[in-house]
Image (tube, rainbow, N blue to C red; front, side, top):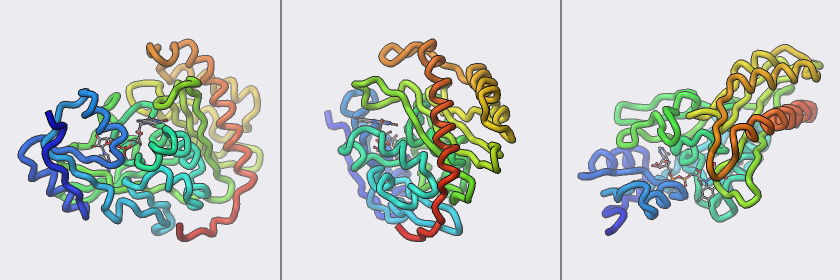
Length: 300
Ligand SMILES: Cc1cc2nc3c(=O)[nH]c(=O)nc-3n(C[C@H](O)[C@H](O)[C@H](O)COP(=O)(O)OP(=O)(O)OC[C@H]3O[C@@H](n4cnc5c(N)ncnc54)[C@H](O)[C@@H]3O)c2cc1C
């Protein structure tokens, strides 16, 4: 049996939304297809009537500065996100996480929008977007709206988007300022290709010898990608010395909910490496606050 009957190559956002609405049976968006086409081929999702391909929509492929924010189109392939000097400058954690997703073949087609819409608790791009405080632009027949990326998740593999009526157009990230930096780290099984045992992104702002503000995200540590707000509260306005870091690890272990997954790791192992991951990722972001280059890129 065919896994789809109709393939629509959308040219604009409204064309894509119309094609979703007009389909006589189930219709789904497809970008790189590295998640969804496998689900269809391997029977984890039943055949659909219409696939709406969004990879040719120009505004969804754009990467540029817009009114002082970094805009990344949701259908921009990950390899082009990794190669972008703008992403390297303003969103180093995203540069690092996108560069670790799959291998070169996957990154040539996989997109950031697909990573977010797939809604896995440890999607590498998603975890970085949370720490970077990204907003998602969502389009539907009733117009466009921006929501924090953190509000897009309902549970493992369940996004808050209506797959028949809504589409992620792109993401807005704050531009980096002097004293700010970010970092991403993950732990994988040596033979692992898809989902991390544990990943983490840190964004922070330093003032002299203190962490003025910090955002930390981690996965998988619950049903949705998680911001560690209690851990952040321990670190805010503090010198990152051993005593504060010990308190931060305690907060992390009380607010993150690690579980045992049969193919990847036990909950106990995740608890142990979480402390190291926090130490490493925080230290890396902290060191980077000292070598902020002038924000002079305005194009790609
Ligand atoms: C070999 C392999 C290795 C991988 N390694 C990793 C890894 O290391 N880390 C990691 O995080 N992931 C990994 N993945 C998963 C996958 O590659 C990523 O999640 C990728 O970013 C998905 O993007 P896509 O464009 O291919 O999504 P698609 O498969 O096209 O779509 C995924 C879902 O999102 C929806 N969707 C897509 N775009 C939009 C949009 N703009 N608006 C609304 N809904 C949308 C689709 O309808 C579908 O439900 C791997 C996958 C493979 C096959």
